[in-house]
Image (cartoon, rainbow, N blue to C red; front, side):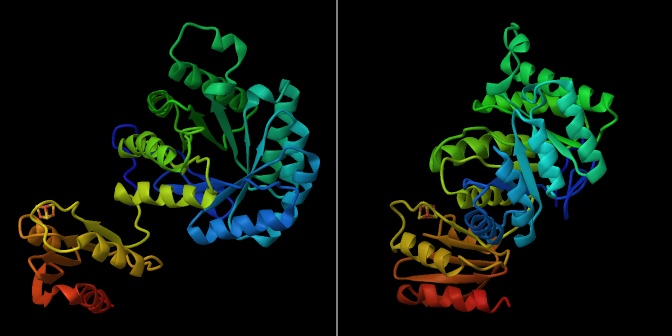
Length: 354
Ligand code: SF4
């Protein structure tokens, strides 16, 4: 279902535990725990909650040795691939790889010296796992930072410098990210990177904000890129419960028609022509379908102007009128029902699709 771009060509495929990224594979959903990784029980509890929300790859921070060692225990209790996020200390990355990490994310610029990077590469080669080079606008090296270039170019140059470094060490199993908290910089940087490399790209707008703002900023940044065929996996960063990150990611992919996860309820915003309490019907139907995995479209429309057309385009539709409405199934109007029966009749029609 992925519409990987026609112009840029497919990215390379890499394997992260049981998930394949890049190539023609579906864009995978990632999230990150916000528990202390060394506290195994709470971390596992959060990962399992994220798994059931639809997370496909989980990342955990490894700030100390205790966390690197805990990774093995966490991994044995979860079902999705685990990525170790490491800054500054190469030995923690090596330890995390030895603990069974399915991928490590590093920013080679802050790992210290080349010997440190080399030790991670050797461990990753032996374990046959990929590395994500994760460059952020906040962590560009001093020299590049001082150059008179747009931030997006600095991000791309920084990422490509590290790609060269890893490739010079004969390591090619990698994904890349160039996140910025600025949506336009993020979009420009990924566009530049997609032209320059075939390595799979991990999309995200960093520090994107609290739930509503963060969701909008991520949907725009990530959505524009996906629509252009750029991106192989994504993480929506929110200053909120990470379960929301997964929900927002799914909505982005479903809205673009790239993946289908759940029913879609569309409802008109209502206007002076609407003569029924449309919002409550739409909300009740949405609530009814909350845990459904059916990938159907239900349209709840307020009047005869756009109502019949939209209702007929959906799998199930209601075009309301004054005190009554018409139920549509797969484009055909099947019956006229009273307003008090709208919800029950829509449910009946949805069940009839089974
Ligand atoms: S469908 Fe009808 S009620 Fe709803 S917004 Fe359009 S014109 Fe107004």
